[in-house]
Image (tube, rainbow, N blue to C red; front, side):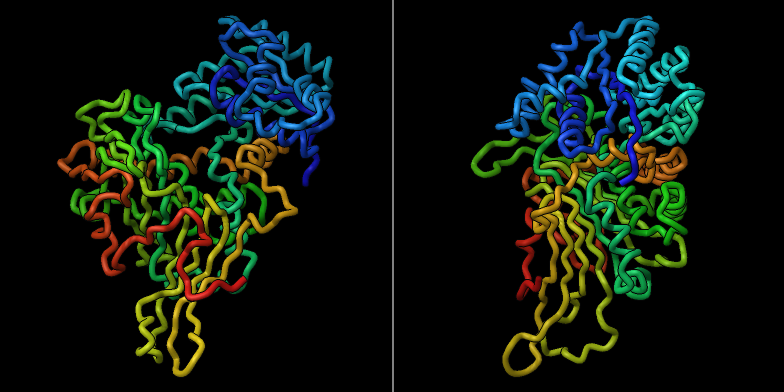
Length: 505
């Protein structure tokens, strides 16, 4: 673990849900794990007229998000953590905030090292960056300065470019950390290790041995209280453009020269630029499906349809289900189809990558009944994080009857190893200046270049929005997208429940 320098974290929008739900619990766990530097303080800033004590009570002492963590914890330990948290009511004039930061920097010895976390709507990123710049808080003559911005990074290619240009007026690219919490998940990072640290996989990781690749992101919940936001976003913007294309880039990227941030991000950008952009209506019609969940009964409970949710237009055509088939135009992946889907109101919450390997060219066990049951590598990102390999074994007894067996690994089996949450890992990386798991400007724009034509096609054409009952695996015609493959793999909530003749551990 790299050394973490003394520093201050300034959270804009500190009275919002993200701070209490994700940021403060992550910082608390870093504190508990002894990952924070000796001199470290957090300064929350927002419009709410809170005091330091008010802030500490709301995000720690009375927080439902830390209730379990703080149970049976020594009060002096909790007090020690709270003493690192401060709050500043934000005025139109940022000079008072500047004075508070300078005073705290001297008092707590944070060595002029500041991270500014933008936990605010993207529409005010530019004005916030300008105010920081105008106060001279961007200046790296003494110490380093970084900003962390949350997604969405634009709503289209045009707006993403405008946002990047706006941020670059006030901060250099190495100072900007675009956070995508999916990249902080251990199993997402394990994609790199699985590929590049194991010679049993990398030689097979190409068009010669892989038939197709499947990525599923399913959520069992609906839009909940985010109807107003979601209706202007949709599944493609909310999940596919950022989270899922980040995963895809790790699957298809070439081996980097080294493990440093820029080498890995260079290869990810090249990977995203190699996606075959679909531009004509015929191709888009044949390779994309969108849908909306409709009212249903799940476990005896009546569930609203999407158009009945709070904040949603009753005539909305916004997709809650998006499935895309696409190809990668490079030597490694030529003619290998990728199938990626994301949806709300699925039977279970799950995110996984499935590598489907080709069947042996010559089947000598034709009578076994295993024909067309390909080998699979399943990388479960959430929940029940782990890796599963499905392969053929002989059933005990006479003859050569072959069935599928599972060889698996689960992170939960690492009983003595604490697995950081995504925000813990990403915050610690930002503290140490490691941008490996953060998106770069050209990376964001490359993803939008692929997604924009799909969004425009759905907006401007008569492409259908298929209905699907809440609690099922999407529209009935979703399997039509996977030509020659039969159907999507519909995973169970627990990887351990994946059917197999036997499990080898």
